[in-house]
Image (cartoon, rainbow, N blue to C red; front, side):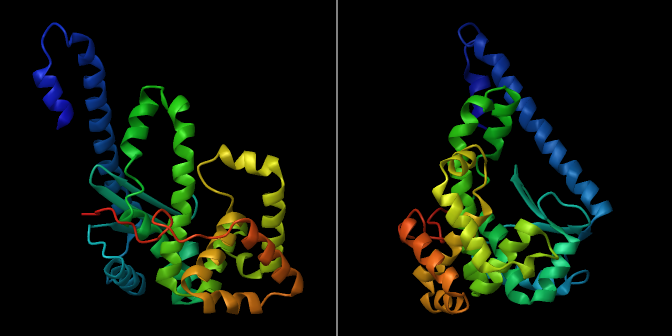
Length: 284
């Protein structure tokens, strides 16, 4: 609406130079709106939409987590055979779609409700916190060939949003062991995830924390290292559910306890308004 207002009010002489960029932005927005509507139409034909009839258990979990997170905007959830990154969420121009890979959905259901709640809570938390609010601006910048210059300044925000969404998922699951198990699956795959040793992950996270090149490599990507997400979740559990972290610590061997202590000393989790999983932003 703001762009349309500018188009109407721009003087015929002085604003002629702005007319083409504004029209280009309108074309981009219109194209993206049509693309996502067509995408939803395709999904309706090639994927299975989560409803009380098709996937009653998953639908019930989603409904409960939306109530728990106080998120009431409509979301279309589909399960299909191939999804980039196992799960994918889109929130753009009134379209909110969550895609779940069928293999992952089945594995999480077999693990128990806590694993499924962590993953669903992660993405519903993403919607609740409105982490997709920059998506339209990113698309416009990409079309205008400006993203290469501005994108690197957005990467820290996207990396931090992953930590926040993990915290949402953990509070929904209320089970640190199950939550860490889901992160392990994201690292090594659905089948090998349950076989990952926590001590091995902590040792690798310790190596990452000590190697400047590993830290530099993270600066160039939109997501934090998964081993850092693992440790961050353990630290967060100590801040909100200390007994849960103590159970995790008790299950480690001596080496694992030492590594965990060193990692938590290096990166203590501080409860501040910026790190709280319950954002103060208005999601309506």
